[in-house]
Length: 287
Ligand code: KPL
Image (tube, rainbow, N blue to C red; front, side, top):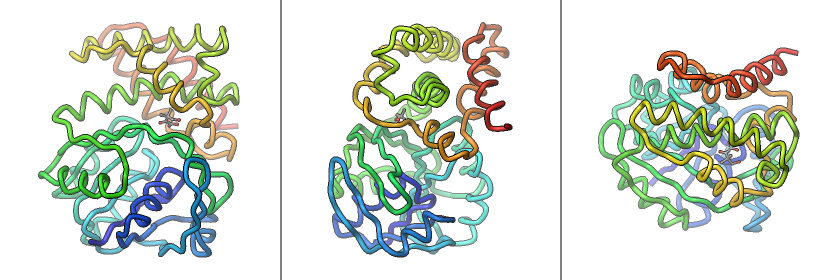
């Protein structure tokens, strides 16, 4: 079975490594310095120590399953390029809201997923496996989820196939809306939002606003409790948004807090804390 990782950044490379180590043939599609480094090899440290020779490519190939891990703002462009191949089942593990709708325009088999596995790029070609979490996947178009799950299971990646993936994508976005901007603005690891009093007050405010939006959408969650669990489980991790701002890269803020601000306005709800962090991160990216 040919497995492909579209977007071999930190998390993509970690997932690809775990899958390749269990015996699957894996192609890593990346770009820039990460692609150049992957051509020389992939090193994993942290919860697992391994050095792998990998097949690294700039363009996607035909595959049986393509794991889609590009940044949310690149979804449309990457999907267009990928759709020129036979991508097989496309399984997204991206952050943010809106990816599923884009992928559904291009592919006949789309599995959507969320994961709390945590990975950091120590340097290009070297990924730190920072937290073993849980992965939930569900069918969005077609019914490839069980096949994807069997690859995860063989690779030792915790996975569950669920029937309510949209609800879980919104919950994950709410968790990201709390952890990611705070850690990115204050340059702290995830655990600090629980340990530091001021950050914790802000985390609770953001969580409450997201919870109100989700509630009006019909999704009942105790968002802060979920945030606390993830922050504790990934305490030593640098959130993806912190990694982006450190590298001076664009962030996914529009697809996370930006979505909650717009949704809150539509539903007649208040979202001041979300709006402040959304605008601060956007302004930062613009400077
Ligand atoms: O998804 C994440 C991210 O960093 O984007 C969490 C779960 C917050 C882990 O860092």
